[in-house]
Length: 392
Image (tube, rainbow, N blue to C red; front, top):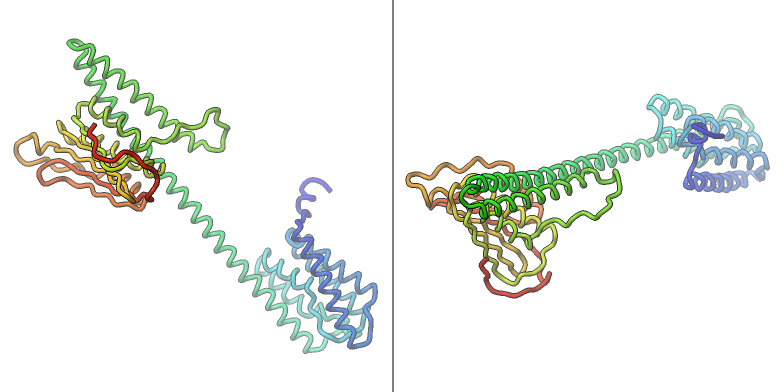
């Protein structure tokens, strides 16, 4: 058979094992049931038991048809071997279980009613079975259906839980991409805007400064395109093979580039590193990089003419980063302007730090300026370096 018919009748190795096991158990059970009566099992009865068990191969695709076949073949041993002992076969239990698992409640109810009297038809040479046999079959059938319903409900709960976890993972990935996109656009576009303005202002009287600003502008544009391409590669994962491996994500070792861009954009920026420098886990290094990037971007956007100080401290089991600026309060008389409303940048920093199990403080300073400080746990012994304090 080919096409859809063959697909519907396809069975697995587990189905084959179930069928063989049911055949063996039913043969042994019926044989022992007939021995007290002194009547050996006949070849016809054995053949019917095996045929009923083999029909279980199609129980997933045709559960109702399989149950009908098992019930019909189950009458043959009763007629061929006249015993009076009750015998609810394993093949019948599996077939009824399959109907309860894969069919509608109305079909299950009909299957339950049919599975009580039909297995005992012809037992002991009589057409109508005894009452105690019907009771035993009813108890067995009800237990099988209850088991199937419980398993079905449990599997639905597990499937729903898996779906919920997948949706949560997808939402978290979207938030991560949104954070990355915000950091890339906010930092690079702001820097490019300031560089373009500086180049225009110095183009006539200081071409050297204008040229340096244009070079930095080009570098920022190239870096923005590269980081945007990394995000697009994440979104397109699995569509096509990449010719070249993706570039590594930035980390704490790339802070010098951010500091240089901040200085070229017109913000006097100092960079200090305390403690023995050591390699950081990629996710921690990326978090440190994005915090400094976002904080310096906010300084250029909101603090006006300000000085900034970045301090990176390597502790025994953590790394701390602080970005502080003196803002408008240190330069302009009168009350300091109200701090900007928290936007996606600060929210993104809080989310990044929370994912690493760290803490973040971001608040305006009493004397003017703004401070962002984060502490991120890092396992000790991750690397070593020269100790001491360095200013850059």
